Amino acid sequence: MKTVLLGATGMVGSRIATEALARGHQVTALTRSGLAPEEGNPNLTAVAADAADPARLAELAAGHDAVAAALVPPRDGTDPREPFTALYDDVLRGVRQAGVRRLVIVGGAGSLLVGPGRMLVDTPDFPEAHRGEALAHHDLLARLRGVDDLEWTYISPAAEIAPGERTGRYRLGGDRLLTDAEGRSAVSAEDYAIAFVDELESAAHIRERISVVG
Ligand SMILES: NC(=O)c1ccc[n+]([C@@H]2O[C@H](COP(=O)([O-])OP(=O)(O)OC[C@H]3O[C@@H](n4cnc5c(N)ncnc54)[C@H](OP(=O)(O)O)[C@@H]3O)[C@@H](O)[C@H]2O)c1
Image (cartoon, rainbow, N blue to C red; front, top):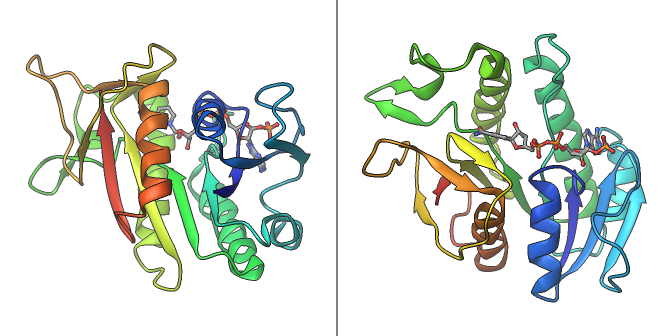
Protein backbone atom coordinates (compact mmCIF):
# COMPACT_ATOMS: atom_id res chain seq x y z
CA MET A 1 0.00 0.00 0.00
CA LYS A 2 1.23 3.51 -0.80
CA THR A 3 0.50 6.03 1.96
CA VAL A 4 1.37 9.65 2.60
CA LEU A 5 1.85 10.10 6.35
CA LEU A 6 1.46 13.65 7.67
CA GLY A 7 3.31 14.19 10.95
CA ALA A 8 5.51 11.14 10.44
CA THR A 9 8.17 12.06 13.02
CA GLY A 10 5.80 12.68 15.93
CA MET A 11 5.22 10.54 19.02
CA VAL A 12 2.30 8.77 17.32
CA GLY A 13 3.21 9.34 13.66
CA SER A 14 6.66 7.76 13.95
CA ARG A 15 5.12 4.56 15.37
CA ILE A 16 2.60 4.44 12.54
CA ALA A 17 5.51 4.85 10.09
CA THR A 18 7.43 1.98 11.72
CA GLU A 19 4.35 -0.28 11.73
CA ALA A 20 3.46 0.46 8.09
CA LEU A 21 7.06 0.01 6.90
CA ALA A 22 7.35 -3.29 8.80
CA ARG A 23 4.36 -4.53 6.77
CA GLY A 24 6.06 -3.56 3.49
CA HIS A 25 4.01 -0.42 2.83
CA GLN A 26 5.51 2.43 0.83
CA VAL A 27 5.43 5.53 3.02
CA THR A 28 5.88 9.14 1.97
CA ALA A 29 6.67 10.84 5.28
CA LEU A 30 5.66 14.49 5.30
CA THR A 31 6.74 16.96 7.99
CA ARG A 32 7.83 20.58 7.93
CA SER A 33 11.35 19.51 8.95
CA GLY A 34 11.64 16.82 6.28
CA LEU A 35 13.29 14.48 8.80
CA ALA A 36 12.84 10.73 8.30
CA PRO A 37 11.12 8.66 11.02
CA GLU A 38 13.69 5.93 10.38
CA GLU A 39 16.91 5.68 8.40
CA GLY A 40 17.78 3.54 5.40
CA ASN A 41 14.38 2.01 4.57
CA PRO A 42 14.00 1.83 0.77
CA ASN A 43 10.19 2.03 1.11
CA LEU A 44 10.39 5.38 2.90
CA THR A 45 10.58 8.80 1.25
CA ALA A 46 10.86 11.77 3.60
CA VAL A 47 9.76 15.16 2.30
CA ALA A 48 9.70 18.64 3.81
CA ALA A 49 6.30 20.26 3.28
CA ASP A 50 3.59 22.03 5.23
CA ALA A 51 0.34 20.07 5.41
CA ALA A 52 -1.38 23.46 5.33
CA ASP A 53 -0.27 23.91 1.68
CA PRO A 54 -3.00 22.14 -0.35
CA ALA A 55 -1.27 22.47 -3.74
CA ARG A 56 1.95 20.92 -2.42
CA LEU A 57 0.07 18.20 -0.57
CA ALA A 58 -1.91 17.41 -3.73
CA GLU A 59 1.28 17.14 -5.77
CA LEU A 60 2.92 14.84 -3.18
CA ALA A 61 -0.14 12.67 -2.51
CA ALA A 62 -1.17 12.07 -6.13
CA GLY A 63 -0.95 8.36 -6.96
CA HIS A 64 -1.07 7.21 -3.32
CA ASP A 65 -3.75 4.87 -1.96
CA ALA A 66 -4.32 6.85 1.21
CA VAL A 67 -3.37 9.85 3.30
CA ALA A 68 -2.76 9.17 7.00
CA ALA A 69 -2.54 12.14 9.35
CA ALA A 70 -0.94 12.41 12.80
CA LEU A 71 -0.93 16.21 12.92
CA VAL A 72 -1.07 18.08 16.18
CA PRO A 73 -3.01 21.14 17.34
CA PRO A 74 -0.82 24.11 18.41
CA ARG A 75 0.57 23.43 21.90
CA ASP A 76 1.83 26.96 22.64
CA GLY A 77 -0.93 27.89 25.07
CA THR A 78 -3.07 29.74 22.50
CA ASP A 79 -6.58 28.48 21.68
CA PRO A 80 -5.86 25.64 19.22
CA ARG A 81 -9.42 25.12 17.96
CA GLU A 82 -9.61 27.46 14.96
CA PRO A 83 -6.02 26.83 13.73
CA PHE A 84 -6.48 23.05 13.94
CA THR A 85 -9.75 23.07 12.01
CA ALA A 86 -8.15 25.41 9.45
CA LEU A 87 -5.15 23.07 9.12
CA TYR A 88 -7.42 20.11 8.45
CA ASP A 89 -9.53 22.14 6.00
CA ASP A 90 -6.30 22.61 4.03
CA VAL A 91 -5.53 18.90 4.33
CA LEU A 92 -9.01 18.04 3.01
CA ARG A 93 -8.44 20.41 0.06
CA GLY A 94 -5.08 18.82 -0.72
CA VAL A 95 -6.43 15.27 -0.47
CA ARG A 96 -9.32 16.09 -2.80
CA GLN A 97 -7.02 17.83 -5.29
CA ALA A 98 -4.73 14.78 -5.25
CA GLY A 99 -7.64 12.54 -6.21
CA VAL A 100 -7.08 10.39 -3.10
CA ARG A 101 -10.28 9.23 -1.40
CA ARG A 102 -9.01 7.52 1.74
CA LEU A 103 -8.02 9.64 4.77
CA VAL A 104 -7.23 8.13 8.19
CA ILE A 105 -6.71 10.55 11.08
CA VAL A 106 -5.13 10.21 14.53
CA GLY A 107 -7.78 11.62 16.82
CA GLY A 108 -8.17 12.63 20.43
CA ALA A 109 -9.80 10.87 23.39
CA GLY A 110 -11.46 13.93 24.97
CA SER A 111 -14.61 13.72 22.84
CA LEU A 112 -15.25 10.07 23.76
CA LEU A 113 -18.45 9.59 25.75
CA VAL A 114 -18.36 8.59 29.41
CA GLY A 115 -22.17 8.73 29.82
CA PRO A 116 -25.20 9.84 27.85
CA GLY A 117 -24.18 13.10 26.11
CA ARG A 118 -21.19 13.50 28.47
CA MET A 119 -17.68 13.64 27.04
CA LEU A 120 -14.43 12.77 28.82
CA VAL A 121 -13.28 16.39 28.40
CA ASP A 122 -16.28 17.52 30.48
CA THR A 123 -15.34 15.43 33.52
CA PRO A 124 -13.83 17.25 36.54
CA ASP A 125 -10.57 15.27 36.50
CA PHE A 126 -9.78 16.00 32.85
CA PRO A 127 -6.36 17.73 32.83
CA GLU A 128 -6.72 21.44 32.13
CA ALA A 129 -3.48 21.44 30.11
CA HIS A 130 -5.07 19.10 27.52
CA ARG A 131 -8.48 20.74 27.38
CA GLY A 132 -7.82 22.99 24.37
CA GLU A 133 -6.33 20.11 22.38
CA ALA A 134 -9.34 17.92 23.24
CA LEU A 135 -11.79 20.62 22.15
CA ALA A 136 -9.83 21.18 18.91
CA HIS A 137 -10.22 17.48 18.16
CA HIS A 138 -13.92 17.64 19.06
CA ASP A 139 -14.36 20.40 16.45
CA LEU A 140 -12.36 18.48 13.85
CA LEU A 141 -14.51 15.38 14.32
CA ALA A 142 -17.68 17.47 14.00
CA ARG A 143 -16.28 18.88 10.74
CA LEU A 144 -15.41 15.41 9.41
CA ARG A 145 -18.91 14.15 10.15
CA GLY A 146 -20.11 16.53 7.43
CA VAL A 147 -17.65 15.16 4.85
CA ASP A 148 -19.29 12.60 2.59
CA ASP A 149 -17.06 12.70 -0.51
CA LEU A 150 -14.00 11.17 1.20
CA GLU A 151 -13.54 7.80 2.90
CA TRP A 152 -12.32 9.14 6.24
CA THR A 153 -11.83 7.30 9.51
CA TYR A 154 -11.02 9.15 12.75
CA ILE A 155 -9.25 6.96 15.31
CA SER A 156 -9.32 8.15 18.93
CA PRO A 157 -6.61 6.73 21.18
CA ALA A 158 -7.25 5.79 24.78
CA ALA A 159 -7.15 8.59 27.36
CA GLU A 160 -3.49 7.71 27.96
CA ILE A 161 -1.20 7.01 25.00
CA ALA A 162 2.56 6.96 25.32
CA PRO A 163 5.57 5.12 23.90
CA GLY A 164 5.71 1.62 25.33
CA GLU A 165 5.54 -2.03 24.39
CA ARG A 166 4.24 -3.50 21.13
CA THR A 167 2.10 -6.27 22.63
CA GLY A 168 0.05 -6.90 19.48
CA ARG A 169 -3.18 -6.72 21.48
CA TYR A 170 -5.78 -3.97 21.35
CA ARG A 171 -9.54 -3.51 21.68
CA LEU A 172 -11.60 -1.41 19.29
CA GLY A 173 -14.53 0.72 20.41
CA GLY A 174 -16.70 3.44 18.96
CA ASP A 175 -17.80 6.75 20.49
CA ARG A 176 -17.78 5.45 24.07
CA LEU A 177 -14.59 5.52 26.18
CA LEU A 178 -13.39 1.96 26.80
CA THR A 179 -11.66 1.21 30.10
CA ASP A 180 -10.13 -1.83 31.78
CA ALA A 181 -11.36 -3.53 34.96
CA GLU A 182 -9.69 -0.81 37.07
CA GLY A 183 -11.37 1.96 35.08
CA ARG A 184 -8.14 2.91 33.27
CA SER A 185 -8.08 3.81 29.57
CA ALA A 186 -4.58 3.36 28.12
CA VAL A 187 -2.76 2.11 25.04
CA SER A 188 0.88 2.11 24.00
CA ALA A 189 1.61 4.17 20.90
CA GLU A 190 2.97 0.96 19.33
CA ASP A 191 -0.31 -0.96 19.81
CA TYR A 192 -2.31 2.08 18.69
CA ALA A 193 -0.19 2.08 15.50
CA ILE A 194 -1.11 -1.57 14.86
CA ALA A 195 -4.81 -0.71 15.08
CA PHE A 196 -4.27 2.35 12.87
CA VAL A 197 -2.50 0.41 10.11
CA ASP A 198 -5.04 -2.44 10.38
CA GLU A 199 -7.78 0.13 9.64
CA LEU A 200 -5.70 1.69 6.86
CA GLU A 201 -5.47 -1.72 5.20
CA SER A 202 -9.01 -2.96 5.86
CA ALA A 203 -11.03 0.26 5.42
CA ALA A 204 -13.53 -1.41 7.75
CA HIS A 205 -14.84 1.82 9.31
CA ILE A 206 -15.51 4.32 6.55
CA ARG A 207 -16.85 7.69 7.78
CA GLU A 208 -16.75 6.56 11.39
CA ARG A 209 -14.94 7.45 14.58
CA ILE A 210 -13.42 4.40 16.23
CA SER A 211 -11.33 4.19 19.39
CA VAL A 212 -8.46 2.00 20.52
CA VAL A 213 -7.42 0.80 23.97
CA GLY A 214 -4.69 -1.64 24.92
N1 LIG B 1 -5.11 10.77 24.56
C1 LIG B 1 -5.20 11.64 23.55
O1 LIG B 1 -6.27 12.13 23.18
C2 LIG B 1 -3.95 11.98 22.79
C3 LIG B 1 -2.69 11.90 23.40
C4 LIG B 1 -1.57 12.21 22.64
C5 LIG B 1 -1.72 12.66 21.31
N2 LIG B 1 -2.97 12.75 20.77
C6 LIG B 1 -3.15 13.24 19.38
O2 LIG B 1 -2.28 12.54 18.52
C7 LIG B 1 -1.87 13.40 17.46
C8 LIG B 1 -0.36 13.35 17.33
O3 LIG B 1 0.21 13.85 18.53
P1 LIG B 1 1.77 13.68 18.86
O4 LIG B 1 1.93 13.86 20.33
O5 LIG B 1 2.29 12.45 18.18
O6 LIG B 1 2.36 14.98 18.13
P2 LIG B 1 3.92 15.38 17.94
O7 LIG B 1 4.82 14.41 18.61
O8 LIG B 1 4.04 16.82 18.32
O9 LIG B 1 4.12 15.23 16.37
C9 LIG B 1 3.52 16.10 15.46
C10 LIG B 1 4.04 15.75 14.06
O10 LIG B 1 3.36 16.58 13.10
C11 LIG B 1 4.33 17.28 12.30
N3 LIG B 1 3.67 18.53 11.93
C12 LIG B 1 3.14 19.47 12.75
N4 LIG B 1 2.58 20.46 12.03
C13 LIG B 1 2.74 20.13 10.71
C14 LIG B 1 2.38 20.75 9.50
N5 LIG B 1 1.74 21.93 9.46
N6 LIG B 1 2.70 20.13 8.33
C15 LIG B 1 3.37 18.94 8.34
N7 LIG B 1 3.75 18.31 9.47
C16 LIG B 1 3.44 18.91 10.64
C17 LIG B 1 5.56 17.39 13.20
O11 LIG B 1 6.77 17.55 12.47
P3 LIG B 1 7.32 19.04 12.09
O12 LIG B 1 7.28 19.85 13.36
O13 LIG B 1 8.70 18.80 11.56
O14 LIG B 1 6.40 19.56 11.04
C18 LIG B 1 5.53 16.00 13.86
O15 LIG B 1 6.03 15.03 12.94
C19 LIG B 1 -2.40 14.80 17.82
O16 LIG B 1 -3.54 15.08 17.05
C20 LIG B 1 -2.73 14.69 19.29
O17 LIG B 1 -3.78 15.56 19.68
C21 LIG B 1 -4.08 12.42 21.46
